[in-house]
Image 1 (cartoon, rainbow, N blue to C red):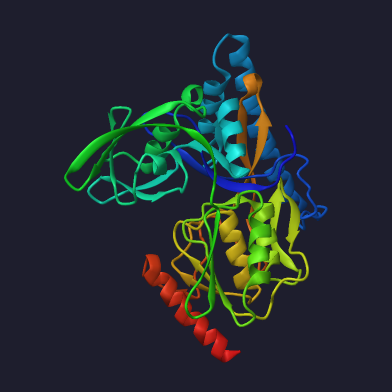
Image 2 (cartoon, helix red, strand yellow):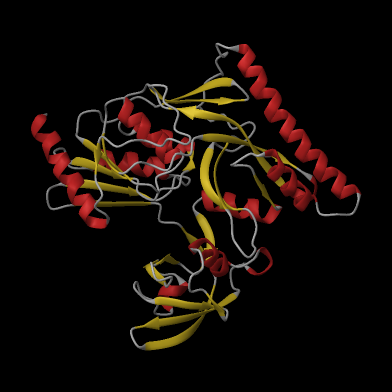
Length: 394
């Protein structure tokens, strides 16, 4: 496989009655990009050997199952999925070639779709929460707050949002740009249908705004390619008297190299995280030259995951940010991808990462310095209040 960066991101395993998401962090072979150091030898070799043997054994079992299925004329992907399921690996995942390529494109900041975001309300209704400017959905007149009733005639009421997204993007064979999808919509008492063409769209992973109080709010929805440089530019261009709110709510992860670059915007070098691959400890360091003086609040919630948790933990442990919000998700494991027959890719857990203070995130999450239950703009306003206090203290 071609070398890529370490990343943590939700992804689709396969379409079916219930779509499954895995929030995985992946270390792809040959991914050293300058952010990675040479691996340090672990202190306890026996533990290292046990971890290495277990993960290599699982990988060999999955590869063997896929190869045998291929030789028997059966599906390597289905055989690999069964093997991963039997392994007990909570974060293990199997992808077809098309699914993996789609995922990598998303990490590059591109996707094929119609340009709308949705959420499921308590009554099961699917509500449009955002429409990307210039997208097919925007051109068709879809607005935030519209109710999405059907997709290609299939009732989506009560369905998981992940399944709704899968229907919008389509299966691998019919998800290309230019293919059509029919949306059944409702706005108040008005119900209608719109047939729109999917298009290649760019993700809006970073949004930078400034409040009346000269606070720079940097919202990062995912760590796709280029996010770190955008954040560093935003920090450099912010007014000299501006404080920062780093809004990581709902950030499900992404390229860890981008999270490290983001950390570098607020740190002057030093440790961001340690992680292990088959027991071999490795480290991630921030670059020098970041802003270490202006006050910073990191805003998180239960949807803050993986690479976003790694960034939060680094800023908290290093004393650079006050973390406000609710406990984060708790995904801190590392997966390694393996190429199987027919282009199938399998990923199995090989280790976990830790914050600079040595705290394990997996299954625990990051505990905020200040617990805030408010949501939406109210949470941002609470963060601004905390930030103003930091400014006074400095």
